Image 1 (cartoon, rainbow, N blue to C red):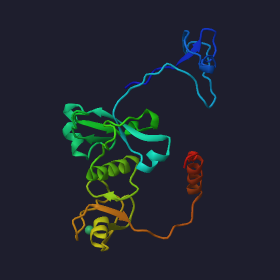
Image 2 (cartoon, helix red, strand yellow):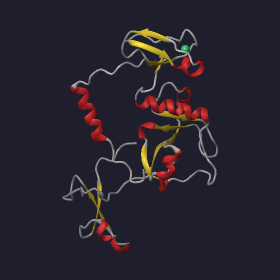
Image 3 (cartoon, protein in one colour):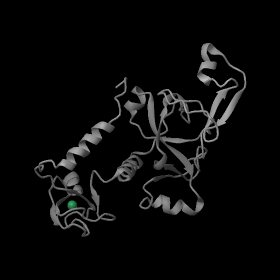
Image 4 (cartoon, rainbow, N blue to C red):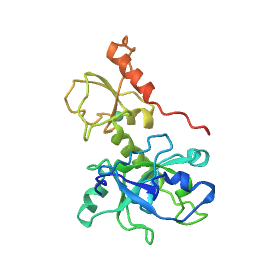
Length: 241
Ligand SMILES: [Zn+2]
């Protein structure tokens, strides 16, 4: 969906902000719609924002927040759900091609072949969210939830493990088979060189690898700068946390 080309700011006939006009429960009256690029009106740059003409949609969303966050926080992370174009259903359901599009099989009458668009995940105040069936949980299956974890992980990077189907060795080192450890309590390690393929685990035929831990080298100046930036970017903790 294209982005609006400019902000359409709303003002009262006398040029005041809507917030002032709406004080004390006042309603009614006409507003002016001011093109922010072609009028003298300035965006009201205070933290509480400005009133603008906006396009809103009501649609299914996939809730990504954990249950305890849904119960305790005001804002919930969601990904909007869109109908899957018929020509893309096979590729979407294959699950190895689009990590920003999480396929959902038809669940009539709520939705047909669909996908949750991780590229457009966003925080929504929980008062805007309504369950499809009041009083009934409408959840992904356990297997599908693990799939979603895989998609979200890959969408944001590869912090957990490397997948021999799709990844190459990011840096030379010793790599451990994930399945050997989790399913058999056994360690299978293999030296790997940057750029080569991981290959299948010779012991269990597993395809997931993690790099072996090693003593942390001293931080370089660049590491320190990156850490400083990530601290700077950390959002304020919620009042309800
Ligand atoms: Zn293995």
